Amino acid sequence: MLAGDFVKGHGLGNDYIVVDGERFGIPLTPERVRLLCHRNLGLGSDGVLEMGRRRGHFFARIWNPDGSEAERSGNGLRIAAKFLSDHGYTSERNFVIETMAGPVAAEVYLRLGRVHAVRLEMGRAKIDRAVKSLSVEGRRLDVTVVSVGNPHCVIFGEPMTRERLLEIGPLVERHPTFPERINVQLAAAESRSRARMLVWERGAGHTLASGTSACAVATASFDRGLIEGKVSVLMEGGQLEVEVGPDLDLIMTGPAEEVYEGTLSPDLRQRLLEMQ
Image (tube, rainbow, N blue to C red; front, side):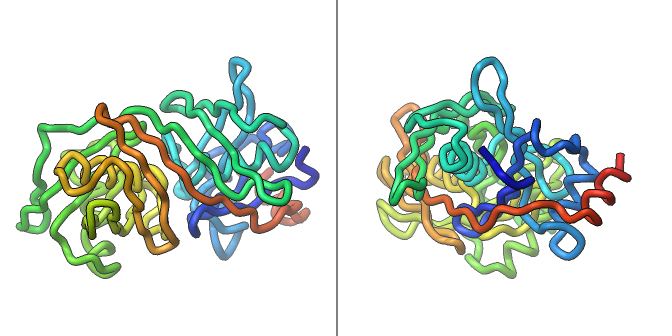
């Protein structure tokens, strides 16, 4: 089991703090999560994974750095699966992790006794056929809106630059069409088996990678006839392999890495306890 208070892990540079909810000893709240994720005042991360059990299965509560909650996270769930396996919560190679958006089946791949990659059955994607374009700053964007347990707006035909992402990412995230906000990707298919994307995550902003975003881009590209059913999705942090079935069932495989295990300092623990 976990010896310290938390683990820091990442999937292609998308980093999360992982805690055992029962052992952590401090109930997580939006304010506490914001401090933990702060890169100057706290531990620094793109989110927090609060692990526990529910109805006999493992459960991952996924916190964004702004204190909101995500229905699902592909990178986060790979990190969570590695955490459960490497720290002795399960000895099984195959197990289920419940999320706010439903169960996800995980299979872990070991190297030298530790998990180095995880395969996730991400469920069936749904495309919103009612939204095919968006007006942003007087310009029409060519979009595909996809749910993979959480919502995504995949944008085609825009410059694949970080500058363009930072310009339109926050505007699309909070567009009136999406009252609950949305994840945003700039996407392009480079071949029948390879796509590229940049990521703006709801509640987190620009990140180096996103597993559910990779699934959304693969789904949107497949639906447009740009790719085959198996595709490598390249992001700034690296690439994920995504399989899209005829009915838009999704399987994602990619790496997960642990950076360190740590214990809260008395100062940070006290600051957290003083918060609501």
